[in-house]
Image (cartoon, rainbow, N blue to C red; front, top):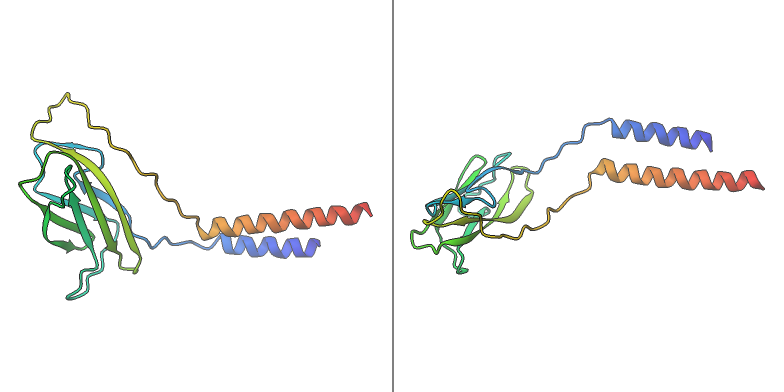
Length: 170
């Protein structure tokens, strides 16, 4: 049993010590920022990601949609991709209030990243005005491969420990 635990420990340490790369692109910055108050209503929205976005000739694989407080999509023309940035123009006829920005992009690694965020925009915002309440969506988390392997290792170790205890009592 000790040999098994030793071998398992060495294998786990060898695996855990290898660098784990996170290939998914993430949002680095945006305009307007999430939950911000903007004055006046912006004429464009952009999101900057941590890596380049994929572009395929003749195919729209990345999208950026802006919806105003009345529920109408106010972006026009195709989104423009430049490296890791996606940009779209907003109509000057947008209704003030809470805007929702929905994005779907494909990173150079081929992974699809999609989500949304909100901001407030009005030509009437002043410095002292408090923001309109916006509900935040919970962030999704992913377990890393290392965390899963650690959990499996701990379960196997616990089972081996308790089996060994039962053998010693007999």
